[in-house]
Length: 131
Image 1 (cartoon, one colour):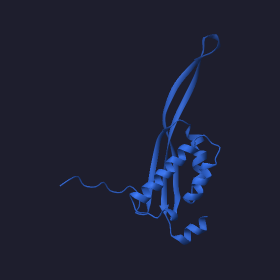
Image 2 (image 1 turned 135 degrees about the horizontal axis):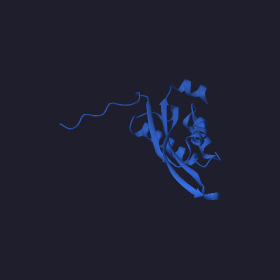
Image 3 (image 1 turned 135 degrees about the vertical axis):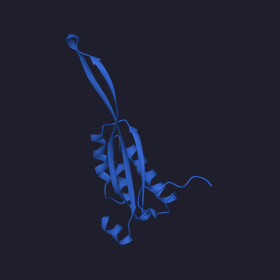
Image 4 (image 1 turned 60 degrees about the vertical axis):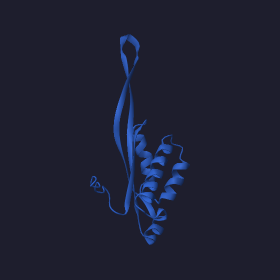
């Protein structure tokens, strides 16, 4: 009677979360994304907790959201999750300016970016190898 359910965008053993409008450049955000790719989620959360990068807190929130999606929406085991993929994209760029000498105008670009984190459930034997 109601609407049909949307088809899954990921495999049965995967879940993902996306965070948009992060106030940092994609290049800086990708440095943090590289830090967690391919790791077990516990290790990735620990790395993000103790990272000195400012954007690491926002990436940690996105990873926790992906873990919660896996557990609550897809019934996956949290202990066997790894960060399968983490990719970064551009978002809008606020353009600001500043007056400079001799009547010129200095451009100030304030970029925004977005991150998508996909977690995958692996078998316990494989998870032990990735630790």
